Amino acid sequence: MSTLSHFDESGAARMVDVGGKPVTDREARASAVVRMRPETLALIRDRKLSKGDVMEVARLAGIMAAKKTADLIPLCHPLPLTSVKIDFSFPAEDAVRIEGTVRVSARTGVEMEALTAVSVAALAVYDMCKAVDRGMAIEAVRLEEKAGGTSGHFVRPPDGA
Image (cartoon, rainbow, N blue to C red; front, top):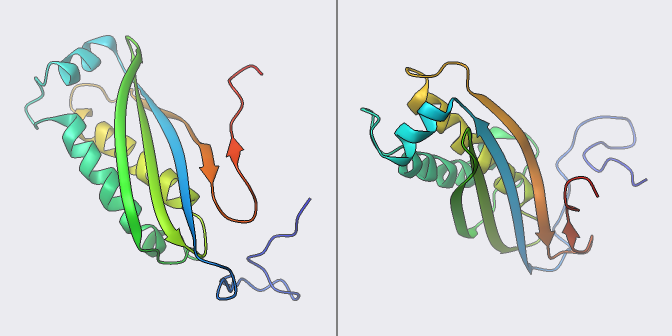
């Protein structure tokens, strides 16, 4: 197991020095699921909520969040993101799946930006729909894939594998 790089020899928190690492193209993909009543999902899909288009508000929230990750997570490096993409799917009659893909050419990866993007997009879905369904649950926020950098390519195995 590798050591935790955000702590120095004495155990004090530190921002990792990435100055000596090469700039490479990096990408990370993360996902989250928002569970809700089927009636709530129907309102979202049919764009019938009085607050507006839930998916477009959540998409913008996710993009904005990815850009602000270094302001939210204490030891993250500010990164010049080149792309943030937020997509939605409906894997069940009671679920919205959010997938975020973030790209950068930098000295460090964008896993936290992708995870922050889908988390905040899920929170935006909750916020937009809470008046009709307070029982919603945000689930399975996770890294799906990352590429670039020295630690190699990671792809989450299919569930159950």
